[in-house]
Image (cartoon, rainbow, N blue to C red; front, side, top):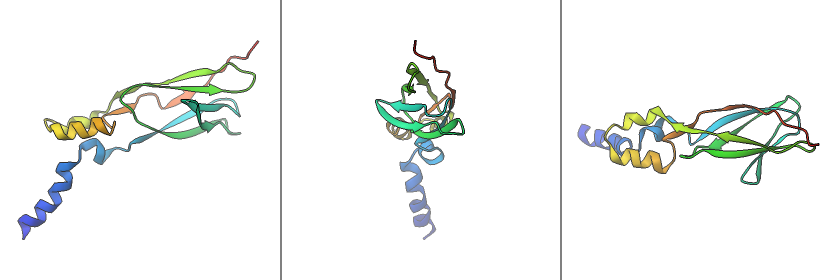
Length: 125
């Protein structure tokens, strides 16, 4: 009976990877700037900076870096680069190839390095 119980408990652990267990697939990014500044990801608005001068948004992690654009009327669009770096939690996978595959497939083997942006926009002439 104990062996069956232990087997049932071990199956989910063996079929999932460390990053899938310990980290989220999204990460919170904070933007600080002028009120009304809109943040776009591939042409889709993901956030607007409010009266407080800052906003936070959860962005899905990727294996590669991502470019966001900050726009505000009367100002030039400002590119913001989210840099992807290795997530050290993935090292717990050790030699488990299946776990590495899961972490890479779910893109949790990486994380966003810069999670705080101060947006300094240049006025149009």
